[in-house]
Image 1: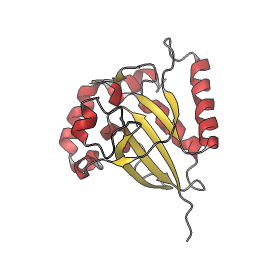
Image 2: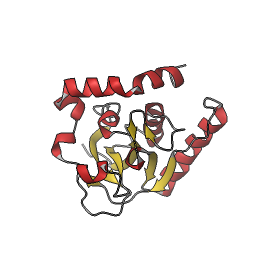
Image 3: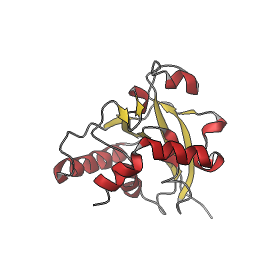
Length: 176
């Protein structure tokens, strides 16, 4: 059976926490952790973590748009983040942990901007929405250790996620 393949890329803080919501959904073919948006070619985790390369930690999602729409991806993305924090996400601070939607097509840009506008107008948040919508740049695959970290390092992932405060924020701000 022929599958259509399109890509989406999101930055939502630590990429470890951004894989699980998308992984194993029907129509999502692959979720990869990596880096994008910076100036250094082939950066390492340690380089990106330093905050000096300009990269974001990102997830790149390959999906079949006939089975899982880009709008559905966006509706999963937004509730994973604090879109009002310009300095990182939860316990992870620095430019490498900022939020952004990287678009591959003009249609993705339009859809991303529309959802951002909806959130701004909703009154859900008192502070401005600072999540950027940017053209996709080169995606650099993160080291193998960081792929599907929630599965390969279950205990460390659970502890890190709990310590981060992400789940409490989601519950308080998105699950109303």
